Amino acid sequence: MKPAPFKYYAPRSVPEALSLLHEHGYDAKVLAGGQSLVPMMNFRLVQPAVVVDINNIPELATIQGDNKSLRLGAMVRHAAAEKDSLVKESAPLVHESMPRIATMQIRNRGTIGGSLSHADPSAELVVVTTALKANFRIQNQSGERVVPASEFFVGLLMTAMEPEDLLVEIEIPPLPPRSGWSLKEVARRPHDFALVGVAAVLTLDRKDRCEDARLVYLSAGDGPISAPEAAALLQGEKITPDLIAAAADKAAVDEIDPGSDIHATAEFRRHLANVLTRRALEEAHQRALGGKEEI
Image (spheres, helix red, strand yellow):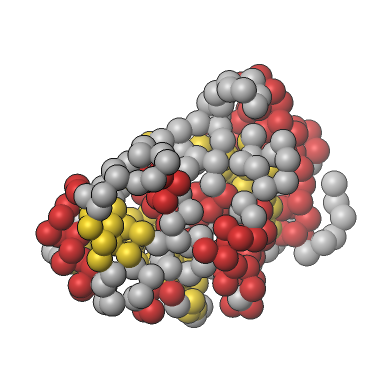
């Protein structure tokens, strides 16, 4: 199929884009990489009267960083982030997630801001930015606000953004010293959406006890699903295989909410989540220890 008729605008600055979004509101859709919007338009699942193409705004495609945060412009392509040394150094979990995203062809066009704005609960970046406590810088004609990842994703394919809003930048704070990370997922075939996955972050104190733990799941509910009760089992404790198993059981049984479909049952997804949580916590723990074997 082909999309319904629409008006096309290609602003060359953020103020110009904001003006168009203010003028057209609910009738407009923002075109970034087009990897989600264009197929939906072709199937007429969405039929915007106006498309605002932000590909000609270079200030949205920058990668910057300092000791406070890594700042990714909303138009940074997945492939660019995958190859960028600053991303690898400052946010290794983001860097590690890039090759997991779809195919190289999609990563060459797809953007970080587009993926996050689409808010697909199966998207790696949705859970990674939540696990890293990223902040989203959003602008409209009335000004700017910063929304934490924990408040940005509000439901299935839904975010805290209004029709006149434009996501301009993602700010990712550095992990504390002695932190480890991991992203584990299972898909039926390479490049498919994951049946389920988990991002894990652990921070250890000087006595190798868990100071902070974060577990966030993809394909396990209507958005990124955090498991605070499972994480709480780890905090203040030395990480052991039994403790990891208890946390994995808690998350898989009580905290995630996977559905059943033609690809997998909810029960199978819970089983996968349990196994992946154990592997992710083991890897995150080893990285936090600096590779020293303890469990």
